[in-house]
Image (cartoon, helix red, strand yellow):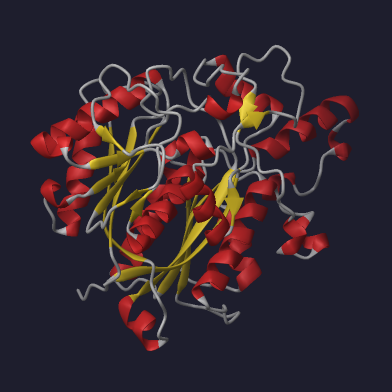
Length: 412
């Protein structure tokens, strides 16, 4: 089988720190913190009262008003991100694209739409329920709406692999383009989970930060004071093309994807496997697919969820894989800025990794003041760090024991 090199040529994003490739990148280099107190609903009685909200998103900038009213927020953000990725790549969809695939990950899909609809059902009966409910809540609504909006007819896949979903979507799209299943792909994640019951479900299991008095510092990857993740909403979509098409249209690629792997701890729904074995195996398998050794990795974008268990376990897994090289490789964590956008977070981090490779810089790890016990790696400082990167590994782990790893390199 002929295998193609796969380049990222466009990035679109809607995030708490900025929307669009340039705005997201500027904010990341500034170390901007997008977490604030929730103002979408009354948080009285909630242990956690902070989140990464996107407050400046207007779907009618991307979708005709009447059409946008039929689409749930996570799908709106996915379409907007896809449009920005097309614009960024200088590529216009032809409206009848048979070899253009779509892969989108989302942990929760449009479940937030069901909350007010259930209340209406209880109060007023079935006739009060929106006819769009059934078409909005399922995870593949994001992929389907993108395909319909842009006229794409290639392979399409949604996954709900919890917090690894965005990375899984990118990995599967990478393999499809590489193996000739499609010529181009849109891939990433979308999540809009900030609603009373959805947010509250995570509050009940005590997985989120309660640093309510200082929201900007609530998400603290690898820090001794971390006390849980900070939920966020976001979407990010990468446009990916095979090398020959990039060359043919004289496009300027951002970075190349060259490896991917997915494993499962097979041990617990919320706690990572203590020895980090399967997280380590995901990293090794991704590097094997890329044809490199651990010593070739210059930078690791860590999952770094800011939870007490995850960050120390991930650090342990990195040491298991990299041995002495773990003292030299730079480790960054971006969730101190964006919060944790569940299924979208892996795609945001993939975008930041790609841009960092292009510009020879590693983004800061903000809110890391004193590394916690077991978090003994070489973390990026609180400001941008200039560094040429030949290979970068990006981790995305999730509830259910999911471990996804991606490998990127310069588009040379």
